[in-house]
Length: 517
Image (cartoon, rainbow, N blue to C red; front, side):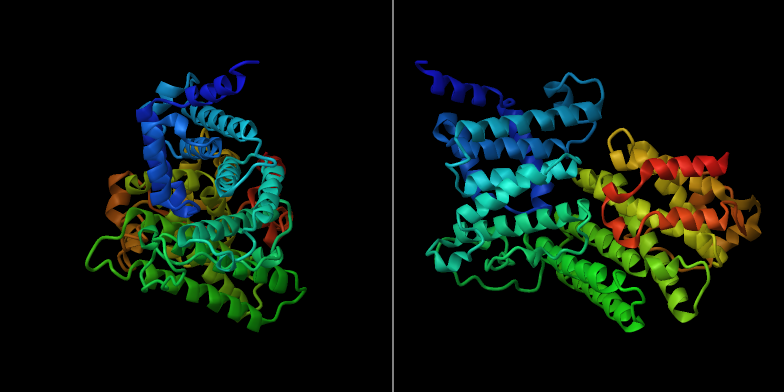
């Protein structure tokens, strides 16, 4: 057909939103998703986007596919109050609009790739588009395995598994290739957990590509490849590199500890110490320059997400010992204390990500994996509270659980995990038996501890009273039969807590309903 190819390309352009809407979505992507999954070189993309706005026909189809992938992923981070949702979608609910926009732009990204014959005509830009598509689909719980496998083979086809230092490439392209390979390894780690291959290290796929340089994008200029290491403070690449260190510890927990029938206490201590060392290093890197300047929002988000995942690994490590029906002495009590502190910290992070206006563009994470971490923390807290615990700890634990359940219920229209977790957590809380008691003597129990810091804030006694909170005293009984509770927990092996897909949500709900009935 005459003019057929040209007309097809024009249709691909016409499906874009308005210039203003497109720029808003691009900005949202770089403030949010790009911060946690830093694959693109920001200045390069922004230069290309400026050229695109001047002359849309001048950009290759692979880059147009990349733009649509950015728009699709950015749609997941839009606020439910965003005017863009109503402008771009006719769906009734905010969640429906977000999902429709994301799917629409993913489809357009794939159409651009198909028009570019990407199966045999591909380059780094094609790979970037696929990797970002897979990342966005994964965070909206869509199927990614086939697309991820395609991206992996494409990366090998263009040599991303080979370190670019031997390919005579410039600094920017070299780092783009390293970032693509690192991004693929992160996606493979997450996907393997979904498929039940827990603990498979990200180094399992053979390659000699070095990790991306720990530098900010504005330090990447064309020239020799002698990039200097980070000067101590966090950079745009720090989060991704730190996450890989946690993946290594996670693999060792799953393969060298949880798989052992009777893991030695020395291994438990060593892995626990490694996690504490990692957490200490985050504070050193991210809080290094806060005396002279406030912590940037994206670094604050990085710290929260790292603490969510890092403390989740603490729960994974101590899960078996902390939830034993009978204490075997120091090891059990130590594990219970470590789990209690980490579970509370995860729920604080969940609150930060889902209620703090400063972190609004990262609520997609709080609704997704962050909510799964919070559910794991809540289940651990329920179990710990049912045992021997000081009054102040019980009160704080109950408060954190109730607040988490309320957040789950508020987010259930936007979060599959929250919708599944909310009724389970509410049922568990309702099965905790306590006797209500008012009066200043019980209120004093909440004021014996040190004031909470801004980062670890819990409601103060005054806030409790102002909100009409009834001070309550635990009576020490857990109404759910101990055998039933242990059987319920035993349905999920500790390593299955790595991914929401391993949790028997429906069975838990029906089991708890049966016990409640």
